[in-house]
Image (cartoon, rainbow over all chains, first blue to last red; front, side, top):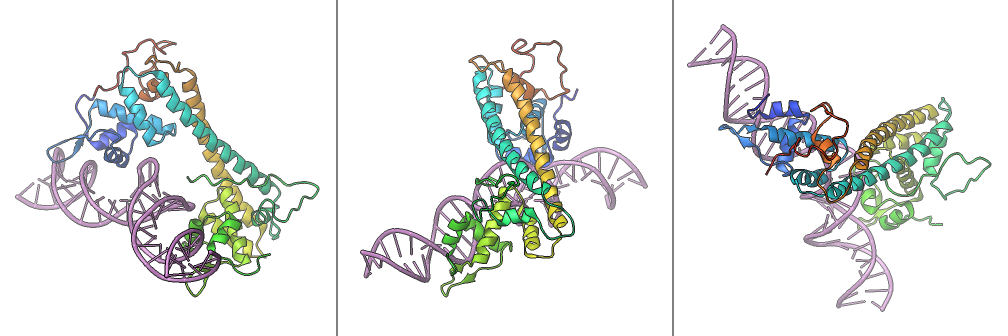
Length: 158
Length: 158
DNA sequence: GCTTGACTCTCCCCCGACGGGAGGGTTCAT
DNA sequence: ATGAACCCTCCCGTCGGGGGAGAGTCAAGC
């Protein structure tokens, strides 16, 4: 059992959080400033490692840093109402769900386009045609509609 | 039919690409530099608007800018082999798929945690417990530790 | 003692794909 | 002539860090 504080490298290894990330978390105030050796090296006690693991788990679930800060506070508060935690988690799940749906819509559309593309040496390509012909433009409602139109609403990068 | 070139505001309105984005696309070389009026205002012809719509469609499908640049080139090349387009699209679909799976995994885990959280005024919370107890750490001793065993995994006091 | 290599420190720029806003010029209608 | 509505070019901020420069620190080996 490592009882004595460890350096940032070991902290990184045992928690799975990169050295860069640990320093970053400290810089933005997500974790408290580490104690330092005389030479200014950071030292981490069990407590801190525990927090880092907590953060890593939360990041693995896709929680944004800001929410993790709130989760950490609730974690430290032994009187917290579990509904507060559940609310944060549910809210995050809703966001995951929204992103999921967005990706699924993209995937569906793209899959339909890909399916109809021969993928040979000839230049005809329904993929390019669809990109060049936004929904509503040049209404070519022929016999079989090849796939979904690209929906409005923006790309994932927000 | 607007035959004469339009300003960036109108270009934005008719293509659905924000003014900021249009300038950005020009700055990074995704679209060619717009012609300018004497006063330096950008002017866009039908061609350019078409390209902007193409870009918007591609963005809606989640294509990264770099890939869109390649798609634009293929679009302009009437001799392109459709397999080149299909390859780009398929590669992007694979990325969409990977992200989808990642999100789904997160969602599954989170949903399971949320389901087991009472969400009331009491402090017991399997969500926090799970975040604090990464898989493989402190192997669970008995079946139902949700709610019992409050003092087992204490967060660092502070 | 001296060097070597492995750590660590701070600081700053980079990614994607723009958005916000400052500080200024232009155009058009009133 | 003046106000509103455009437009311009910069520069900074987003989110979660990664990469690397330049410098300091520490233990071990010779």
